[in-house]
Length: 85
Length: 370
Image (cartoon, rainbow over all chains, first blue to last red; front, side, top):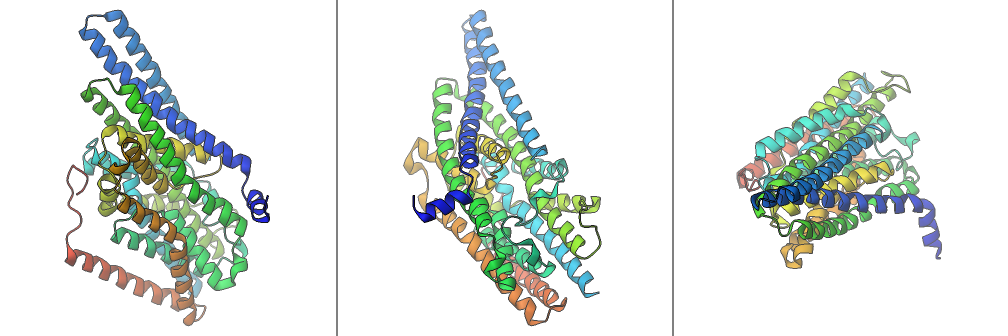
């Protein structure tokens, strides 16, 4: 390791940086995925309802609702971060 | 008497910076929503303005004092802060003039670093803080946001790819409104605090408050109002750049850039590594476009934006240093800041007049202020 790299490593908390990258990546991709699942669940339940498959439509709606709850949880977590930073 | 005049000037300049911060960063919150017609422009901006105002009251810890980990606190004087604010305002107005989104926080840090160096030499700068708290995040934020938005849009298209377009578009538009609200709230919390910190420090330095005092209510209210008014005035040129000039985005891309961007910003804040909202959102827009098709991104526009990001710290620092130097030509009293304030106001008015003569502000339409 070069002197410059050692200095840089001292300056920047490597663990903090890694945690940030991992957490931000998971949060960013996770929020998009969960919200997309919520949209999928809603859209699919409409399609299945039109096909007169109420049970499957209900299950798709339940998946969508669960995903929406996770999105709400993410929003609450975001507000908690704002108030406790 | 002289210190009271400087105090008033610093407070006025801090609120002016807060205003430019608001209108400069409006685009981060509303550009994608306006571009995809998730919200009407005036409604989106009024909503963002209100949430910026509310956000300023959410947390009043003055942990976000200006350049805290970057400049040696012992050398900071009201005149240094004043010169730094002028550097930040000048850079914000310059980038606004050219319609380029750039970080107001970096402009403020750059301005204060420059004026501190002009006042006390390079020993005024805490190198570790500058690298660790400013430069590394400045490099990290665009890369991270670009990759996260790119990966996210791929996942989004895969999940909803076979759904009816109407449901998908409405869903993501709704998501854009919610994520825009979160961004506005976070922006009010983070950025209004900087102004509160500056004013509170000036009041402490002038003996109006005790050393450990919290921001008085009028300071919180003034900072919240300035950033909300700035947001409400809308930086249309930058909204147009972020919303329509980087990529032509669909609702899923708009949500991905903004929703995943909000998550990235809040997660990084939680781990003590706050990233620039401007860098995250604009790089997210680029990532969401590039993941669909590389040629979907107007790389010339993207290059100009990145160039502005690179220039922000040194340019604001240079203006801050120059401003400090000019104030010292008139001695250490209030005359220097008074002269600089008058000249700065004259230049701002001239810039607005010139801009108005060259063409009206970017027309506001529902398709993105353009």
